[in-house]
Length: 201
Image (cartoon, rainbow, N blue to C red; front, side, top):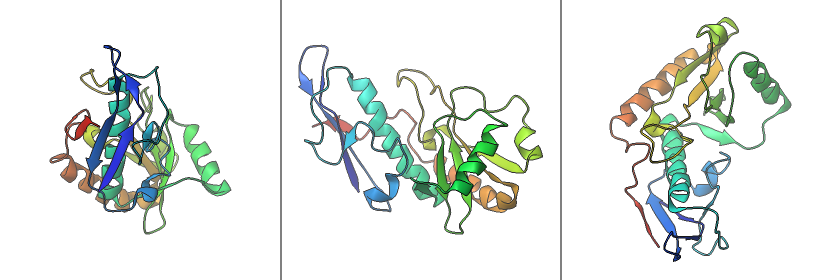
């Protein structure tokens, strides 16, 4: 289990407040930290952050749910985020950027050593759906309730971003297996904006 705490914030009524969330995980917390948006505005300790007057409950709840979705994505796919990629991987990512919109990008690897780009843009991924495949890549769209980033307001009907997992065509079979696992898990996962588990400290 992982418990995370939000920054302390001030309610519209002028009161100091803080939120927390607890969720299950198959790996230690450090396993997930290489995803850049896992621990942003979150702490393992209740006193882990100073006061903040600029954020509201909604924005901090968004970060707590983002961490929960990150863990779910990692545990379902078996992929691990990579903090510092090699020159070869950076060039590989640069090649992908030539053919599609890329934002909130992160590198993940499988136990077989395959490399994947988790790409979570606000704008459409491709103008032409075949552009990536024509260049030797393949991709899937991740179900919303297991998409780690899900940028935008929790009050919206859907997040402003979509999440895509991109890899080389040579890893097609591995990606197909990941897709099946994601869609199976999505049937039971909470909605992307489900606040169950988020509580006051």
